[in-house]
Length: 289
Figure (cartoon, rainbow, N blue to C red):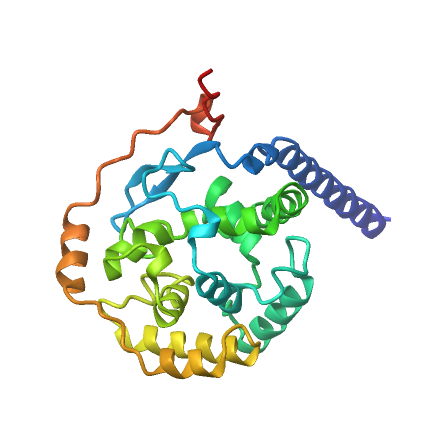
């Protein structure tokens, strides 16, 4: 009798925990921010980013940011390099790549540690815009939900445009528009195929793939990206040969990185903020008649 009572007590406790977890997840999903306003190309929003000293800074996403780069201003080679590097099935999945997640789980199981993420470009964008970096179950669930909603509400080109304007590529270097000037002294439209692959190689994390301290690691990864691109016929054999022989010109990068780390850029003046510090989408101003 006692063992039966203990068993029923354990079952009841597990049911309560499961119910509480379901309610917690449900509330978290219900209170997620809307993604439909992101479809408006003239809208801007403000998010919080961190510098390499872990200090918070406000960052404007949208045309109100002077470094904002429209989708068509990114060279095709850059868009292809990013897809080849981060999300090969970007144009075919619906925001979440379940096949890649399965492969990531198998890899992590074999290695006995987390070595592969399986996150899509859309999931990374959802995390960068709305979520924290902490690795929790609830954050992963909300990331999945947001990614699916974003894929339904936004075009692939819009998702890629937003992603390329918020990715971290150096110490307080957010967005390819900033990174292309920071590293190469030119606008994104003038990037070479090698330079596109070079920036894409830093996307897993600019601290890990840091050309200032680990140039060889960045070059090797950019070589792998170029090989993926030519294998997938994203670039021609001639473009590949020219890119693989090119060494990016990063003159003065050590001095520039040291200066940025010593004195991070000032906090941007955000276009607005919702109660509680959540990001808010600011509609574009109506045309003057």
